[in-house]
Image (cartoon, rainbow, N blue to C red; front, top):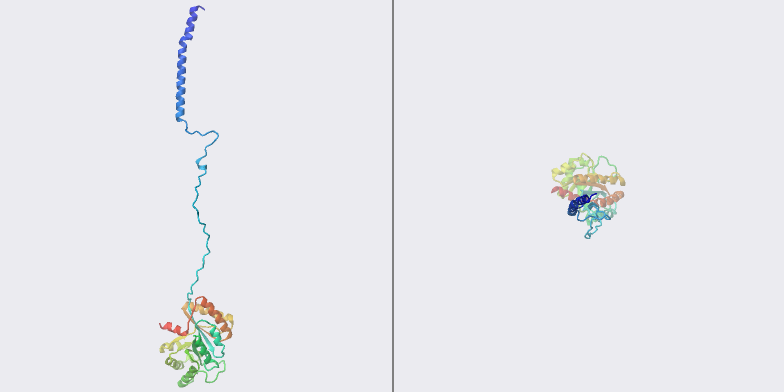
Length: 311
């Protein structure tokens, strides 16, 4: 090849060709620098390391703060409030046919509520029982024998007031009976199904009672009794029986009658019961009085009953 031709070729490859290569290098360098700067500007500030994965916020354990001290309360057993004795009703108990046995004084003393003892006249212990009852603060009544339709027992001829008697005889017999039982507040009838149906007989008796400021309790041995109507007419203090406790002289029967008595007391506010001075009756009365008193029933005398009605 000629020398000139070689020179021209070398110049064409070397001199002029080197300038474009430097420009490309510079351009590439600038692009790299700008890319680095852009990458650094937008890269995350705290990039987690590959060895430790970030824990989602929802799975992080919260920091437990110490709780203030608490008092643990032990449930207490409630203490029952004592139930006050609220009276369910008032009860009057009359004990008939006393006077035969001196032991009635002891049986009466065992009943620690107001009750009324009704004593038959002119019996061996009539006066003695009236005296001991009065000392005990118990109410005393005369259990006056009045004529029944049928006499079921034998009595002395003069013992009963009878419908065939004259007015003078009725008054005399009543006064004799009243003298034999001291401290009486009133009377009730022993037997008397016939006499208490007779207005004339009861009018004479009631007039005598009014003179002495005594009350009358109708034992209600007949549905035809005139006593209540006549007592109202004469303004005589009066009460009537609601329940017989011991027509059947057995404990279960007497207890059942006490149930009837309390039912009437609850319904009406007050009820009057008549029992008799018999061993079983005394036993049941003593037990039931304690039971009913604990339940809140109030026991009153006949006089208290009459006074409460008069108010």
